[in-house]
Amino acid sequence: MSEVSTIGLDLAKRVFQAHGADASGKVVFRKRLRREQVLAFFAGRPACVVAMEACSSAHYWAREIGELGHTVRLIPPAYVKPFVKRQKNDTTDAEAICEAAQRPTMRFVAVKSEAAQANAVVFRARDLLVRQRTQAINALRGHLGEYGVVVAKGPSHVAQLIARVEDPAAGLPAAAQTVLRVLTASLRLMSPPDFSPDGVEP
Image (cartoon, one colour):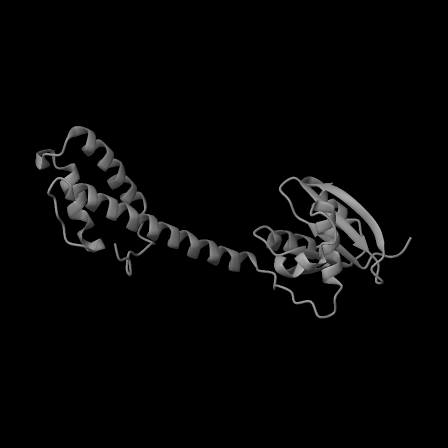
C-alpha cells in the first residue's frame, strides 16, 4: 500500500470523513470516523499533512491533531469548492480538501490559539450584547412614547426609562407594565460592568 502523505478531513458534528492520498494524489483510503474515533485514528498514523476546511470548529481540531505530530493545514472553503468533482457529499468534500491541500500554490489559514479564539469570542459576545441592548432601549423608549412618556436619547438616560416603567404612579396599563418590565430586566442583564455602553447610539 502506498504511504499516505495527505489526509483530507471533512468535519462534522458526529461523523467525519477522511480521505488519504499518497504524494502523487492516488487514493490510499476513504474512511468514516465517529467523533470519538478521530483523535485515536490520527494518533495511530504516521505523521503526515492533515487538511481541513477553515470553519468554526476547525481550529480546535487543528490544535488537537497537530499535537499528535501531524502538520495541519486549514483551507478557506472557497478554495476547496473548485476541487469538488461529483455531487457534493462528505466523501467528495474530503477528497476535494485533500486534493486542494496538495496544490503547491494553495493558500492556507493560520491555526488560531485558544487565547486568540477566546479574544474573538469576547469581541463577538460584546458586540451582540451591545446590539441587543440598543434594541431593548429603542423598544422601551418607543413603547413608553405611546403613553406620553418621553426621555432624552442616550444610554445615560436608560435609568429614567426603567424608573418610569417601575413607578406604580406612572399610569401604565398593567399588561403593558408587565411586558415592559421584561425589557428592563433584560437591560440589567445585558449591562454587566465589563461591557461598557460607550459608543452605543440607541
